[in-house]
Image (cartoon, rainbow, N blue to C red; front, side):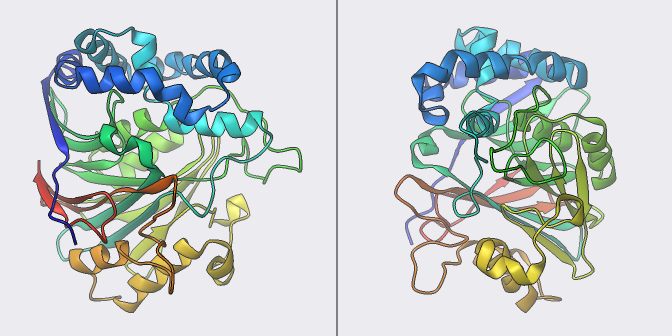
Length: 363
């Protein structure tokens, strides 16, 4: 195993505009570099780029209505990085770009083989929430950790692609992890011609930050229920009281998944009946990461701690160099974290956790 490596930590405090400006100044070169190649990563057909940018820009009004403070933060990032508001807002629409592209190509963009895995477990005090973020290898140098102290809001740690408002992480009260789901505008699976694009809503990065601002899992679920979304994802939640769950979402529908086993796990297939999800016996063949995550935690049921979940995050399928810890030519596990909700601690490995030891970050 390689020596532990730290993520670049971006210190932010004050008003949301002030936080954004500090972020933009600290990360100016990285943000500007990613902005110059962003569309090429997520929408490979250059002829589609103008249409893709218009589709993502339609989300601005949705975010302004749901979380105006995050619009102020985008304005601050743009000022600090010396970029336009539109260019910076676009950086928080990566998942949406991929799912939009899938709709344009008449397919569902998310794959069960190369996306994220999430976990949550009740702990002796609070909960443990964990995430393996699997995505394009080219994005590794652009991953940063935001350490925010907003006026009037809870402190947080949130991972981000440079310039975006954030992704899953930990706050004083809750933690969030997430994984993309195959795109569909409604509860039903798409037909043979693929899913139609459902239009604007709140993008994943913004919703992640909205969830981290809540005081409990219950409050976070209320935010999901009241917010129209732009992409299909599962969010895995845990709070300081030990309330844990998964919530599968499409643009206009959601379904909560709880368990009496003391833990929940998720990958990239729907599990709930609302979305005609895969029952557990079928996941071994059709979503093996989801099956493996559940089986590994079930073995330690009643004895789950941070170390047990971290061990599950390093799992490879027998005889293969990939699994929950993902390695492929174009994609890889970019980070793996375990958040100790209620203790203000987040342990994160930079890159595949089978190769990198976790480092402690504190609120």
